[in-house]
Image 1: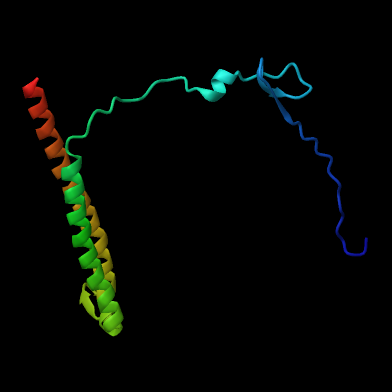
Image 2 (image 1 turned 120 degrees about the vertical axis):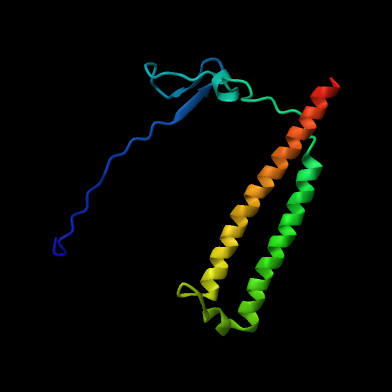
Length: 138
């Protein structure tokens, strides 16, 4: 060949699968390969990992979550408005040689983490309170 490339033809054999309702899934034309039963395909080998009861604090958690979402949305909206109205002000150095855009962005990330931790604490406290009341009534 003048181009320096050589073309090679590959022989690839694809063995299709066959599903036999009596014996399960197995390779066609092979009796030595293992089969999978229909029970293994359609069922799990274990039960549920934990028992989940009624969540008595779901209304409280939803309410707190909405308040946190609204608060974070307002803080983020201020960031967007500053970028739209005065993009040059985001270049102002405000802390340790970092500009306002970087400081505000990192602040948003830190705020989200702190809000998540506060949310988790408040929800866990409420769940424990409601579960204790339920145990006392029984």
